[in-house]
Image 1: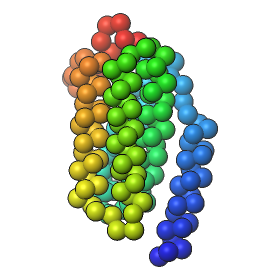
Image 2: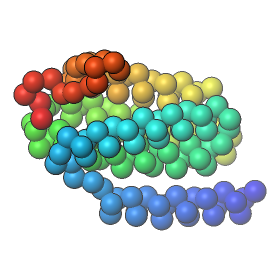
Image 3: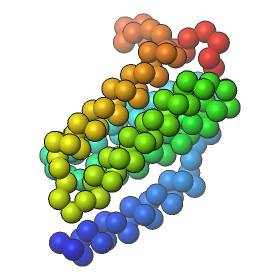
Image 4: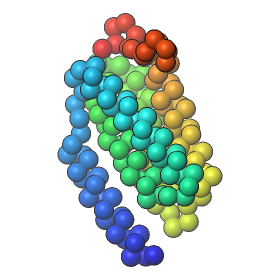
Length: 147
């Protein structure tokens, strides 16, 4: 078990380095939409992994979310949207807290799930409420003047 944990940790560190190099600069609406879909998929997969106790899988999805949030921070910084930057930074802090929980020898599954739920609700929900409009039926778009 200890060997598995060590190998997983090494793999995640290597993956983090690769992910950091591959950080995406968002320049088009299509790139932004792709990143948002990636966030939704990673967040859903992370929550599913947490629910089943597959913490290594949850950490992989968390790495994807962290990379995406680094791109989002650059995107909103370029647009000088202080509220959005604060929301993204809050999300990154919540991801860091979750990552710390998942690195423990004995993961508190309920606490990890609660932290993941708070991440999605307070971070994603706050930004969507402030910067987008539309619905599942009509499609979502930025509010006027954001992009």
